[in-house]
Length: 68
Image 1 (cartoon, rainbow, N blue to C red):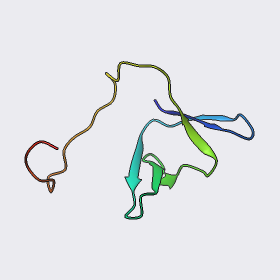
Image 2: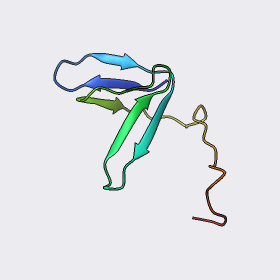
Image 3: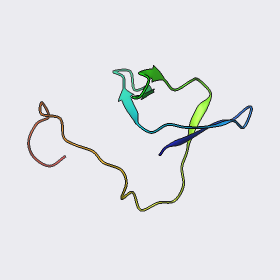
Image 4: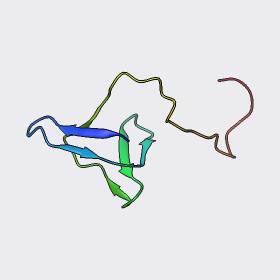
């Protein structure tokens, strides 16, 4: 479960599902999938060292073929 922390206040929030979108200009936005609301400004992902076994990803059906 991703944990986000506000740098200014130190407040921590947990989100069960988060999707990251990369815009055409290179900026990214993160959305909480439970509420379909964006992660508030000022909150950054608090990353722990992990083996990433709980993270799942799947290929988009419109994605091309081959190794990237």
